[in-house]
Picture 1 (tube, rainbow, N blue to C red):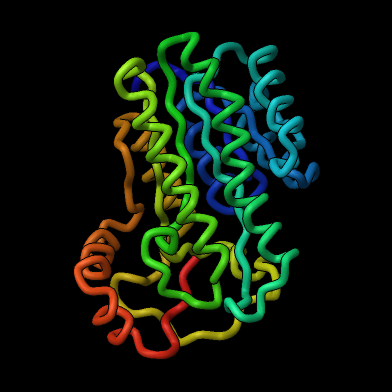
Picture 2 (picture 1 turned 30 degrees about the horizontal axis):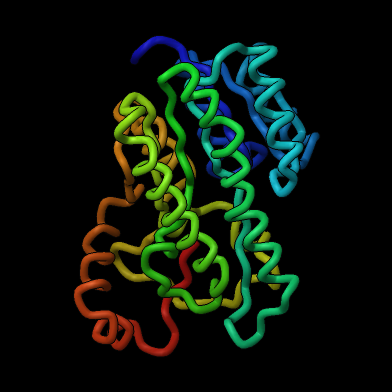
Length: 263
């Protein structure tokens, strides 16, 4: 492994974020962990050792995200990696969405990452180095679960913002890496915490089988060591995405009227 890095993780109180924190702490990295739930966040930080910094943060608020950056710089020093991992799902189809549903999905899944990008990338530019990682979803690339509706849309927008930022930086700042991570179904409490709950669904087939949070965290940890523009945490998903874009109509017909749930 390369030398110890200062790494910020949002959404670190449970699921992928908590497992990633534990894995990166075991590798010797110095962590700033952010989430809204103070008790759960403190528990994860305690598992990551005495140097782990817990910063209660509502990523829907720009000021909170900037405070997270400033606390990290003050207590841990220059930031090497910033991971926008916070997110939330929804269990409503398009015609059932309310204004409040759309606003919440955009705030948690898109604007929070925008705040993180705008907070940390200028710091990376000053250092001429850094790695931004945005955790999206396979549904941002292939919207095959209609119950996730505006969640998929918010993640598709995150995919686009990530690519545009990477292109903005590539010529003048080639040492700043911008990566997109697209998990498929992950065995966490994501579905139970989704707005409106999650309807029961048939078990997903083959390539859509759930990964563990540990598997996804390991893929992100590997990405930190070997930066890439984007990864699917389950490599089988790349083939599904190719089939989708080759013929959207045929793809949708193949999944029928009740596509399998995906997080």
